[in-house]
Length: 189
Ligand code: 2AM
Image (cartoon, rainbow, N blue to C red; front, side, top):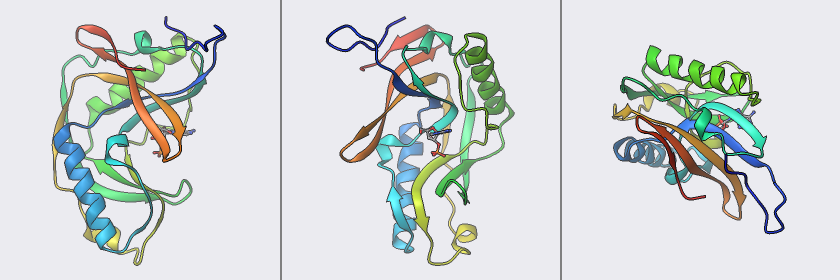
């Protein structure tokens, strides 16, 4: 496994999570949803559309690339955007997807694989969402029932390992590896 090495050869931890990358159509639907929320007066830290993702398991600090531990998706399945919501405690406004047993099963397989490999992850139950705005301030809570994403859909065919990094423009999430039907695909670190 590739380790993240400093110039002196010492190994540093990366902040990792496993997730799904939106298709271009879904990313555009999410960006236009963000614009509608902005126009409706919702304030907060809007995620850059390039950073939008759906988390399957959050690993946190870990010294190794764990792409090889990820399960292949198997039979590809569809995900469709359906609604928005807010997690009050985590202070995020998110887009949700239509109920999808194949997605729940994939998240469970990811977590089983991580556990079997001794890789720790946040054990909070899987609650599929795509965060759009951090620390949202809504002019009116009823807005949540009136604004909906376009029902854009995507086919899920691969699981992604993301690296999360703090930059001067906030957090940046980069895919560093994918488990595809053909096996591990390395992406730019
Ligand atoms: P969030 O969008 O709901 O905050 C990178 O931080 C990704 O991992 C985000 O999608 C974040 O979800 C998710 N995540 C899940 N558990 C996390 C945790 N304990 N700490 C940080 N991020 C977590």
